[in-house]
Image (cartoon, rainbow, N blue to C red; front, side):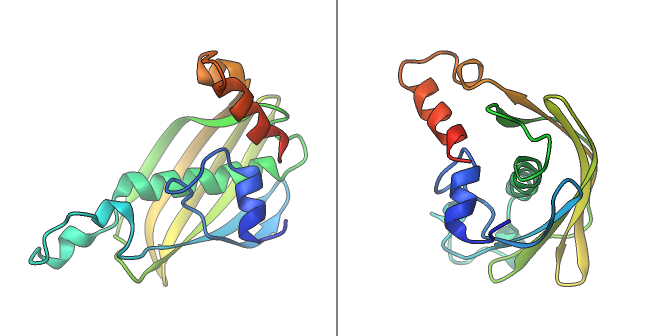
Length: 170
């Protein structure tokens, strides 16, 4: 897989500010992917924060770490044989997620996602996220499904075409 940012945008159905993967660092189709997400002080989640907050208040939101992990899983699935086809990938369920640390501005979160099983219209994955040598998140199970763009957008005028267009650019 080309690790360029343009390729990430071509695969993921989200755009700024919700693209939470900056680079693919390793890729073995159908097996594993390594990605990187640089956390910066200019992230939207830090907007409007007071200057005098304690350091721990600048921890990158856990929901954003999970979203970044999920986008990494989507990249692995979309770049693998038996991928989602023309459907849009969606996380159906996360299980056994354990946070053991945090990320802060200046850190690089490195996700390692493994395929456990790919089935027609679905994927089962697991993995972990690290900052340096410290594991900050372990995901025991991520279950993803692919849904037609019209189902995902609820048939809203223009939305299905936009989602379908994003799907075709993979």
